[in-house]
Length: 449
Image 1 (cartoon, rainbow, N blue to C red):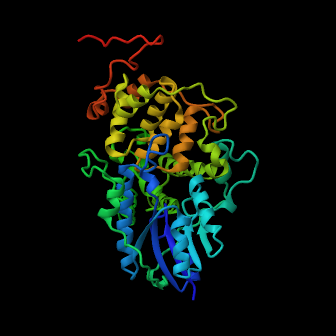
Image 2 (tube, one colour):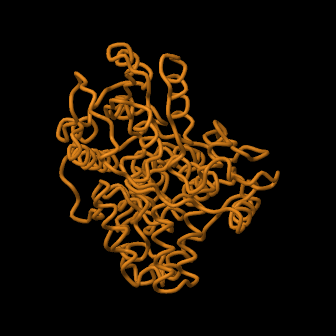
Image 3 (cartoon, rainbow, N blue to C red):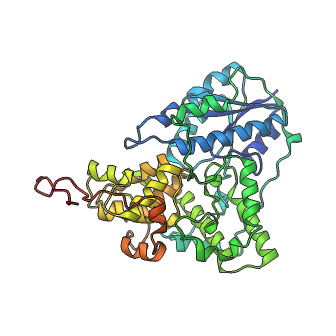
């Protein structure tokens, strides 16, 4: 009798889950686990946690929804703690497991962790690519396909490359439950591991983790007129309907990219395609590019020099970094964006570019500290998109133009001319001076009045 465990990672759903479908075919009995690494909540990543409170709350909501879904089919969601190969090794032996199922990941640390599981040699690891639109064998093979997003996009937009429809899930096809002597997922217990302050800001962006909320939001968005004007509204700093707001659901796998792509196609068939509906797909292709680029880059995605010939001319000033984090720089727009991120775990794409450019170009700080802070704070953190975009701004990515330097004044005039966003997020309450000492280490006097 073949017995397996499916390990959920960034695929917290049952629909369009190829690895789960395949494991269900190969096993007679199956159990479900989520592995929590306590190191996620320790400041080991440039003095930042890997997972902050906003994202952990969203993950726990997603796990709670997943546990409820599994219970409808007579299954339970269990939790184990530690590195995957350490947590799973005793289970493999105790329950005579023959199979482990898990989604493939582009993240370097995630791939290292699951290679250690594969090295146990006692089980067959069943895996699949299910966070991307394409499969690995569909990727363009030309030498210049990944030198820029434009090259990649033009290659994958060719008619011979097609995106498969999402896989349907049927609870009737799940094998019988394998009984494990493990704790079941408990929302309050697991939430307390990573969330120390339970109150949620009144300004919190209304994201609720889980496959059902994600599906409802997807249907709601593509039942509205918003997709028809997406390209014109996507750069707004604070309006809920200005962008799709699908990124948190994609980052934790409440939805797959293929489900979003399919919904976009259905919308275009019903209401007609235009530049804005194309641009939604365009952004999905940007996400796709970063996913496969991260896989190709490996550790280079996280190095200071990245893909550049020379390392950036930056340093590290703790005072400047703290003011950037806390929204107390001399720049009101940057402060407002950082206050929004800290309170809600969310920031618009335009806001992210603005504050990243400010950290790299005006503050002259090491871009990796900014990327690590985003990793801790963002509710929709995605390893490929986050570190890839930070490299892009810092000029150490694959972008042939070599970085981005935004004029903050022009950005404010264009996207917040009346300072509505600044006032809402109290960006004007920043520091008078950026540094408390001048270049010769003399104290800087605060402005009077």
